[in-house]
Image 1 (spheres, rainbow, N blue to C red):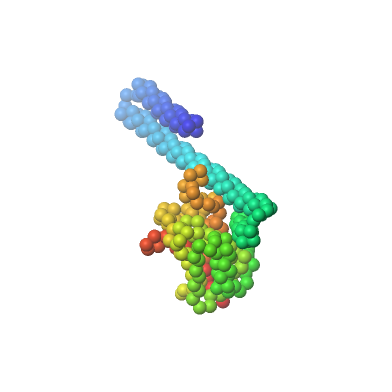
Image 2: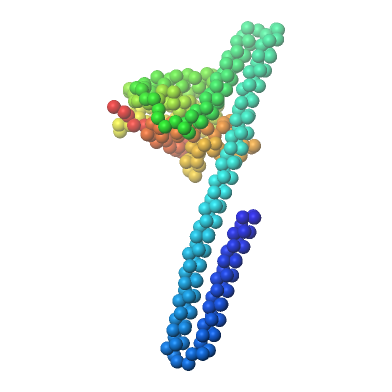
Length: 308
């Protein structure tokens, strides 16, 4: 409000000064005309007056446009800073919750295991659950560290990768974390091999599958597909979740961006997963798109160049 009041005051004073300058020029013209009797002299005075008025109006218009442009740019800066602050606040709320939940779960499981009277089957289930919680915590920490690394990384290590093998590893890992009730299927058409960073491609796939798990019902299956299409590697992750409306399909790849407010959101996450996916795809000179799926759900489609 203070900024807008100052901007309005400056604009008002600017036009007020222009008005007084024109008024002063008119007074000078009137005084000059009082002692002139011939028409040629009067015409010259009038011409000089109009020239000065046009000069004041022209220069004033340029300065006014520059002033308004500056106000607009500053307002855009304010909006960006406010949006970034909101994203960072949401991220801090989310990451605090995401870190506390698995730690609290593991502590509770260990406390329960330390008691007597627990059957062997119960102890085995609790150990598996504790291991899954540590995997979840490890994945979260890896995402935070990787997002920081990606901001500074300029080059990546490339080696020949068998995409079918990496997809199988990611599917097995996410099945273990998600639990036995979640169906995650993979389908790789033919031999899909290309050059890339193995750790980053694995992180990309894990984040895409995790995103599908978070935003789709427990009973709905998730499909991971890969094939060579028109000389490029195509990877698709399909779910039957809530989907993403078209205006949000580009924003969801921004750092810390999550749809809605962190205080009322039910789904887990930190807003880093899809950002990491986008950065990794860009580093491999590829493209990623969020698409709608007929019948409901989302399709995350990635195209990567097939290096020879």
